[in-house]
Length: 281
Image (cartoon, rainbow, N blue to C red; front, side, top):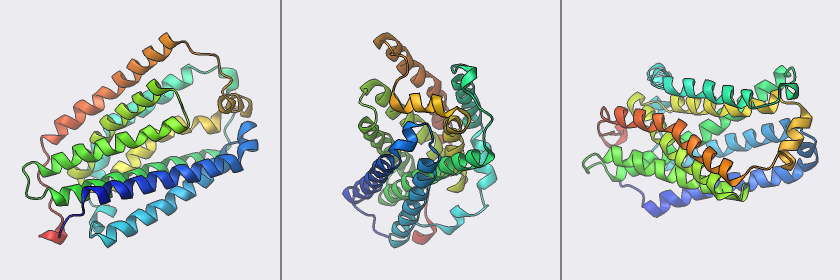
């Protein structure tokens, strides 16, 4: 099977990310009043539905380009992939704990179970879309182009993780502060390489999707357990001002806590062999 050009791969990735960004912007404007009052569930649910629809689009593109491998969407390899994700579970717990301890406890409320489910759905939809796009499409498309290149799969993992990371610069639209966005980009590369290793070693796309979703859930859950008043302040940006020194410290802390993912990814990559799709055997 002939591989698609790199420009095609990048174009598809940009279209999907831009489509998600445009949809998110439209939904934010539509639910602006509700979000300003601290009610985010309508926005979370609507965004999740958009992500599911975009995931279906990516799956269609994968099928059109012979990159959809049915066995990677089954239980085969799922448990192996989930076991490889042990570091992510520790990270998710630490992320939740640190954010929880940093909040005024009077701002928390007894969560509505339906809201928790909506937030979980939103987190898993985010994880699935990004994994099926970056690992399922981008990594596999680059891997096909590098089938006859030494360490082609490892290079495909690196390039797909880089594309995944650079796409996070779109966050500048929502957050004009460069350093926090740059930290997010660097984190995305390290986490992306880790998820790519889990995907390639397990040969299962559901495993990294679930792991990715659980990491996002550790942050998204606060939409369901903080009071509308606290969320309203968060959305309106009326939190206490942060000094440049605090921003710099936060930047290095964000990088430091994600470095273990990079180390784990590099260790797992030692066991990565050339990924040969069944379609080209």
